[in-house]
Image (cartoon, rainbow, N blue to C red; front, side, top):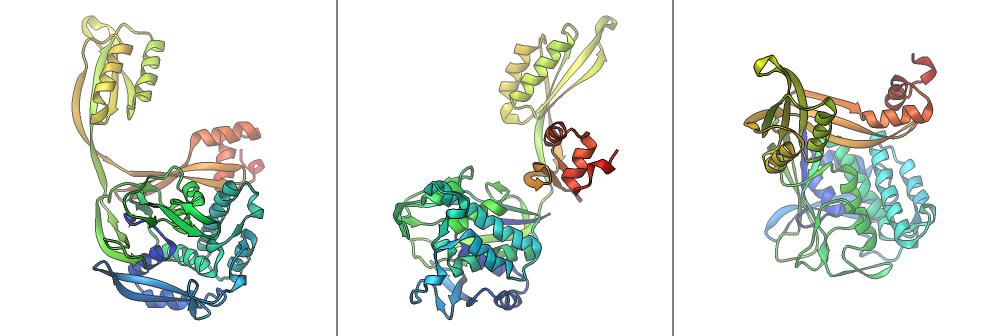
Length: 397
């Protein structure tokens, strides 16, 4: 499985993400030429090899009519765009459908955050910095780079947001800025002694769109490392690193707990099984067995991670009649699992994806299909076909 890992120890911004991913591209010069030919009004992507804090990497300049946005004379038409204005610019670009969908989704998430901050409808939100042409170019470049790199999975470290305050179009705001904080809801973040804005709204929205898991660098066979450099100077390298390679097929160690039961009703065993799952068991099962004196009985099995052992033992002794529990350590091969939400004809549904060990498959979440079937008066088969392929339910029997 092709894995892209983003090290956000110094935060994330659109230009740093773009630069790091550009270093991973097998043909960076060709990408730059194609990007500059897209036709974003007056925009030119110009990468520069440079050094920050002793680390060499790439910094990207997004030139607007030959000048960087922060240094150019005022161009009123570059700012104060609504979401519809941004989408009009994007609709005119010859982007692959998937990349165009990603760019629009990133801007829709930013608009949603801004709307919540200012108490307005999304259609009323006007962008300041993130509506500038260089920001539109950064987002488009990152989405297009990920589309061409084609990772099967994108992971990242917790996101360093910085501290202190940041000056923007709305005045001086705390770090992370309100819209950035909303875009980071549910994601792991950290602060620290570094003063300044390390994670921008653009960076937060891009991470939210593409990253499926956050945590330490997972086992992988590293193929290439990209370093995207920022312009600010700190007491450490201001660098976002991107790792691209093949993820190692996963395995882990688990405990198997077992006990024999011959004096509990089916209802009592079902109740105990539910409590075990709630307590963190990976799986619970029963098996018919024959016990001493020829009595029929039930073997109750529990699979768990080692750190849940004590709690699950207490649960077994509390909710079953057993006097002893056997345990053994098992090594198991596992597939990598992730879940995403997709919009279908009947509304959003969760899709589970597993990969690794030479296999890849996806499955729509049963509970979502069940809910849609009940709401729409369909069979489960019709709901699945409509959610996954858009078929006419009248044609499905």
